[in-house]
Length: 424
Image (cartoon, rainbow, N blue to C red; front, side):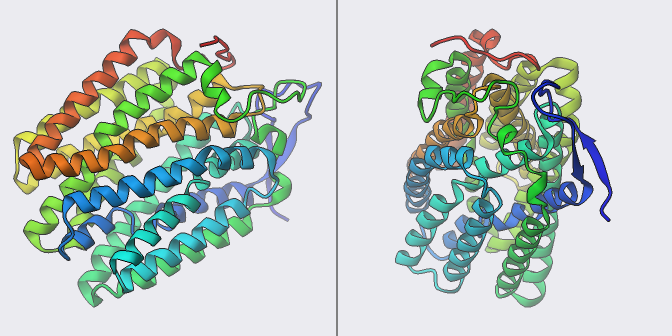
């Protein structure tokens, strides 16, 4: 019989929810799910731009595809969050997108026509929009509120470790057997993710806690985008993330494009560039719980925001391949810390409302708007003034994000055990 560990329903008052036993099998399956999702949730992911750039696609067209696909996917994100809040089929909401995303990536890799690329990327964006909220809700339902921040950090460690292994595998397989090796790797990671999902015991998921109802009487909280409009801290966090990702989102894509064209090696070059970021993110994810406990969520958020201005200036000032090392390490610091801080902050702000997943999805929607719009703008900047101009603009945008944070830092990231309920 599988061994078990005691997990209190994380901050739930003893009178409401008794202690429950969570099997180690489910926690291990959650870890493996994050490991395999690193590759299975994004299809070609960072390789798409470099792959298409070496086949004559311009930065403007690539940015337009990313922007349109991203914006269409964002329309589905709040609905996906509400769906996660209201359903007990959280595992299925991860499994189905994995299948669709993998199929779209395989078709794109085999036959990268204009129509297939467009349809594949839009479809991937739409079905992929549910994975983030579903995974966050599944994690919260498994470990509860008290252990949520630590488990989110563990999820990120496994996720970035999976990315590293995948990137090394891509580099080796493509070097040995060529592009067709990508097909087998994508199939293998998809099957791994599906097996991990099946191994999570549905009886271990507390669906009440998963939607943020652990500490209230079960009355429904705010729903949909109304969550953003009635919680000042949530609004400020969403705005800061929108500005940050407007500057940060296209930078790795553009660095990969630039060196993939120069070196005429899209998959191996992108594997190295992305691998540096992922290795940095593993270290950041390991350090994040300590940073949050020692300095608090707001200070940890400040460290993440400060990384982008430095990164943009470095990328704009030097053009040798060595520059990918410091710039991608800083990508790991910035995006890595924000990826951990964001769901933890949202959970604290919406504790007891029963609308954690839709609130988290709403924040993801706002930050995604910035990321999606930035792609076409960055592509246009490259066509006007080269890659350096785009990186300089990204650094300037990052300064704005940090300034907004500094002005309203007291409104962000409530202490553990406290909810931010200030009206806008």
